[in-house]
Image (tube, rainbow over all chains, first blue to last red; front, side, top):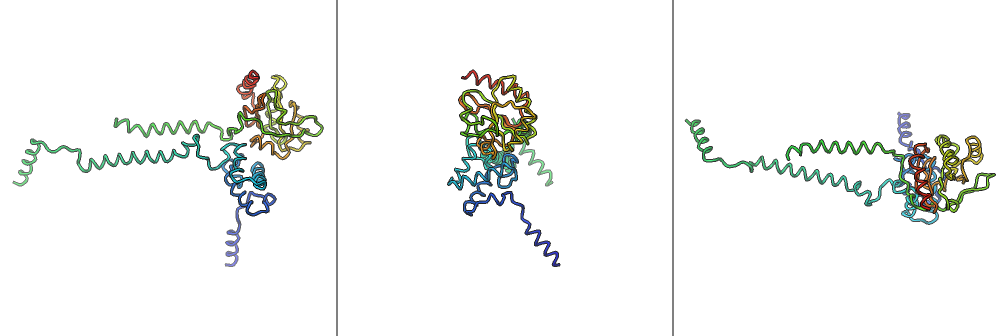
Amino acid sequence: MRALLLAAFLAVSALPALAVQPDEVLRDPALESRAREISKELRCLVCQNQSIDDSNAPLARDLRVLVRERLTAGDSDTGVLAYVTDRYGDYVLLRPPFKATTLLLWVGPFAILLLGGIATALFLRGRRGVAAGADTAPLSEDERRRLDALLRKDDA
Amino acid sequence: MRRLLYLLPFLLFIGVGVAFYMGFQRDPRDIPSALIDKPVPSFTLPPLPGRPEGLSAAGLKGDVTLVNVFASWCIPCKAEHPVITRLAREQGVTVRAINHKDKAEDALAWLARNGDPYASIGADLDGRVSIDWGVYGVPETFLVDRQGRIRFKHVGPLTPQVVEEQILPMVQHLRTQG
């Protein structure tokens, strides 16, 4: 039992290994936490779907060090991001900015949802019309006479 | 009209299929450079030990120049090296290089073994200048015009096809621009 508990404890305490190396960490904890937040926004261009905060690639390390240098030099968070996008383009941002070229990316899903909603609404309205018999014409004089005759035959 | 509506999902499917087909033809490693048509970043790199000339932004003005980012530890660099050598020796294109995160002695040995077509080489030991150039994986190759603006970038090894179809026409064009 004790061994089991110990195993469970060890399993829980085994945190994922961090890419950020101890020698990169800034002494100022406030600056370091800003650096971590910025690093999570930046794509590692070598391994593309990882942020530089997650990646062990040498370029990711260089960029992490660079981010910390800019912060130590007094850059704002947006200043640091601008420094990197000036060199690598918007592609390094894991959250693409809202721009004319990214309009389709941001608005597309909502536009498709809207179109789907309109189509569904039109379809349902059409079906309700059929159910209520709104588009059936009233019986003609001839039809009414035939119907009466049939009903009377039943009674008899 | 009604019948056309039934065709709509099929047409949409075709459209999405074509979009995916074209999307998957693209190389996800080929990221557009943010530096096209911008002046080269200001930088000065020292030469490899025992060599007279390094590389700087000022040194890239005046002639159409191919700037090749290479390293001795990079295998594709070795593959593209004959292509670059031919470009420099036979096509008369000025080729300069940034030696990316290399050990000086390794770089010199590599050049002694594979030949040195470069007019000058700047040693970027910590890779910081490469970051200024937006380099994310060697080899990368840039074409710089006479005013010192970056006009073209190729990521990955240069092939004879890239040289024929893109680099040489671009060099011609930039040279006539003066």
